[in-house]
Length: 94
Image (tube, rainbow, N blue to C red; front, side, top):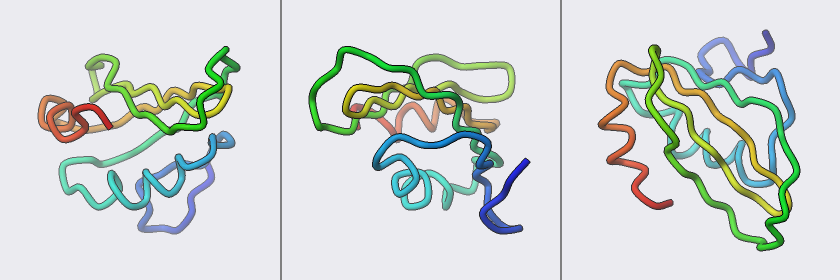
């Protein structure tokens, strides 16, 4: 696995859609109850809006799955946390 730095929670295995890296580093990485962040693969969509949107999709055994929408693409992001409900509350409708 590739890491940005030894102290980073973000695992860089895939490319990221525009704005995702900044969002993860600024909004999620500093949260103490998140232990790891795994961006997944990017899929094309019919979404033509230039807006960046993060949606909490569902809880997993190890935390949560998010969907991140960008221009013409969607990317899965898996979060390892012991408090997925708190993360869902924080994200609201970003």
